[in-house]
Image 1 (cartoon, rainbow, N blue to C red):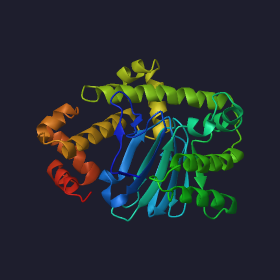
Image 2 (spheres, helix red, strand yellow):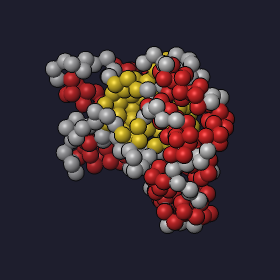
Image 3 (cartoon, rainbow, N blue to C red):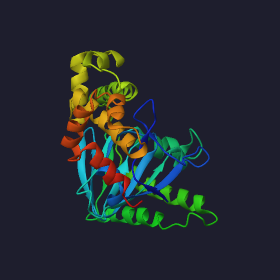
Length: 304
């Protein structure tokens, strides 16, 4: 199981890069521990894979464009394919332990275009109302799914036949989840999907050009929409403004440089679009309570 201390994003988008994820067996299992996770939160991102997660200890906040939920020990859920989402560990110093599977729907779909894909997999993946499926231990029906999910993390990855056993277990879990899905495509759903596609185009633009000056007209042009649509997309889906989102992306990139390089604070500030080290320092302190030097010292010395 991969021990995760942060996520990497593909350089030309906000899609998460998944190390060890291959077409031969499109799956990775990961462990997140709160005291070892840089900054205590993940940025807005997406991935083609679905994300099945189970909270062993502590609590974590999951956000999607249309909902947010605090997930506590014993609960779990699924983030659907290509859904924008972010997470925040509640009290980063607490003893959070989160385990998750990231896998392509094709892993359980079987033959492309076959009965399993068309009847059970595609309807759930394409149901835009199912951004985040929650599994509550207080619900008897969902307790069964949680038990199945929890046991998948006990499988021996080194044992012969691991992939077959995991595929079978994930398929059984999927069958339960699909039974709860009731796709209801409509005009409002299509409009929301179009807005999210435009938002993703603007997020890709920001991720590519955050070191440069970015204005709202530039973002709107990148997604072929009006400035009003730009503001509305960020507010309705991410509950923030374009300006605040750009600031967040710049801070995330700068923090990564602080931890992974020995570049000076001034160099990092200029490379991430802050202009001056003093402005960068002010923004970082407002977000984390640390100066750049304090942040670097705190997280580089963590026991990983």
